[in-house]
Each structure stands twice: as structure tokens, then as C-alpha cells.
Amino acid sequence: MDINKLSSKIIGAAIEVHKTLGPGLLESIYEECLCHELSLIGLEFERQKSLPVMYKNKKLDCGYRLDIVVEDEIILELKSCDKVEPIHKAQLLTYLKLSGLHLGLILNFNVALMRDGIVRIVNELDE
Figure 1: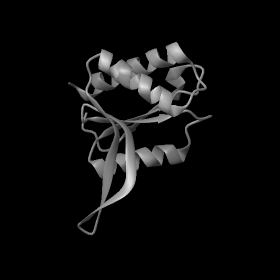
Figure 2: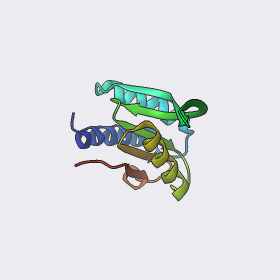
Figure 3: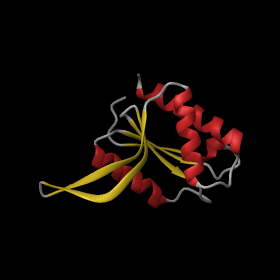
Figure 4: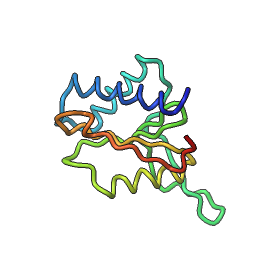
């Protein structure tokens, strides 16, 4: 599936979760509900996927965990915070670089309108 169509489906699922639950809950609740919604629309995903770090040809398990990886294409970083900070964007860009993936979405559910909580981060995507 085209990565832009895939991201649109993911955003639609996030909007559905936000419309149903609203803001103010824990990230873990949104993660559980978003995974259910992704299942309902037939997308494959992995939760809390381990992300090792390569350092001088040595694989280190440093404890990085990706919230959700959809279709082995897009990293989802879920938040429930006042606002998305530059450090959140830097974190997701680092995850993209370490994983070799090209697109990530920060989904901050602690907003009045979900569209205001979506940040798209691209790592060398050829569109």
C-alpha cells in the first residue's frame, strides 16, 4: 500500500479513537484502543517493538520501544500531553533513523481536535 494512503488510514483510526474517548486519558488506553481500531480496518501492526542500537558493529539492546509500527512502514509515537515538544519530534526522528523507516506520526490525544495533535515526521522519504 502507498505510504500516504496508509498514513491516511492510520489518521482516520486515530480520529475515530479520539472522537470516541476524547482527551485526558493515559497513553496506554489510547494505544490499546488504537490497536483495536487498526485491527478493525485490517492493518497489521506491532506494539512496543524493541529497537536495538548498533554501536561500532555491536548490537545493543538499550531498551528503546516503539509504541506501534504499522505494516512495517510507519512508526506511531503516542502522546497524551499538553503539546508536542521539539524533543518528541527529535525522538521520533531518531527512531526512524535507527529503524531505517521513513515515516512516523506523533499522535497526541490530549487535544480538543485530533487534527491538532498529529505531527508527521519524515526521514528521507522519496515521494
